[in-house]
Length: 97
Image (tube, rainbow, N blue to C red; front, top):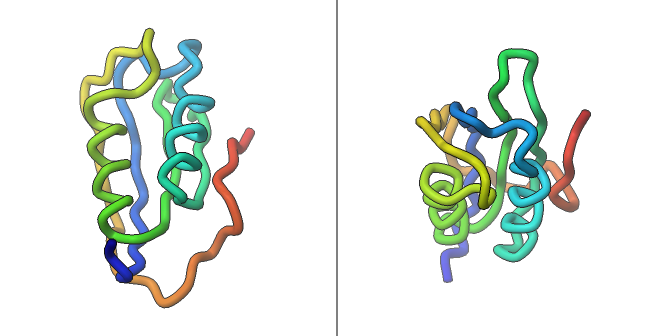
């Protein structure tokens, strides 16, 4: 397991609202032991930030790009501000409103 802590921001485009995408994202992040947040945007996308061990974060990036919730249709996922961090900014993974 990677000991390197990483943080990344993300935005998911497609049919990702009204399909339980946020709750599945929160569940997946918690399964992987990651922290951060997720929320819907007025533009119809889902945005958030995720932090944790690099290997787990890579698994989450793949999930956000290719899996999502059962009824969603992901067109693309954009990742930004990815980099190493010395400590996590969050205690858990939450849905923001």
